[in-house]
Image 1 (cartoon, one colour):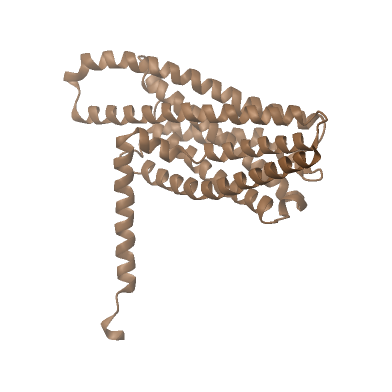
Image 2: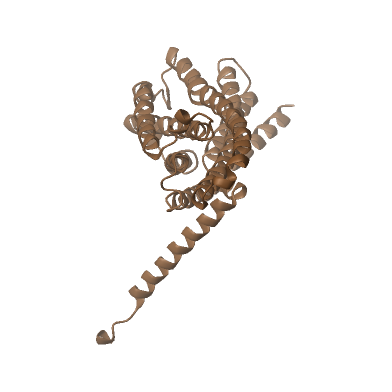
Length: 330
């Protein structure tokens, strides 16, 4: 029986180690690549003045920071023997603060993306006036400032206890509740409600569009087409993000609850596996957006392809000019 248990524990350790190593390596490739492609696409001339695209750009920038900074530091600490996270108090506090803050900013930026689409599809002119690029700029700045101020408690109360964790006791409970409620349940719930309301607005908008189609100019039709594609992208992203986030929070909640009870060594390994799986879901959630947008929007694919192609042509010309030999120097 002991031999069987020991074999099961070794297998679970091996599976956990391979899952985290392979998934993090993979996500550190596809995540930043997708984020850079998103940035190229959302900064194109067709989308620079669209508020929804700006919210998505803001989300992408923080997703890139999370995947690169969080993923690399976790991989280094868990699989390459880096002791900085477990030995340096300042780095522990700073990393925990930035990861928590940036992930919250990315989540609430997606919430405001959904709100913008709801406002843009509203029948009320006053609501539609909210969907403006200048307002999007102010909102993103506001989100960043508010979140980084609200998240300051992480920098204060995280530390080496003995590893980089929340201060044991009341704050550890508060932090777990904060992660579950403030960064997941509240934004995910609001995003779902707003997305459903936006879908309802879209149905009403189609009825109005049929009546106004004859009066629409080509420019108005182009704007409407862009907004429709952005709406599809947003809804698709919301559905997948909320599904992944709910799964991640469920795993984290189980890990937190089970961590407060006595259990066997095998159960401890199960808890570690569940916790690591929740971390994989976290980084997967911030690595997927480009691939979701590419699969759901032909306009996104077209603009993205043109931007990548133009950048490649410019880079090729720069390389050719650099490699060209000056006849005088021959």
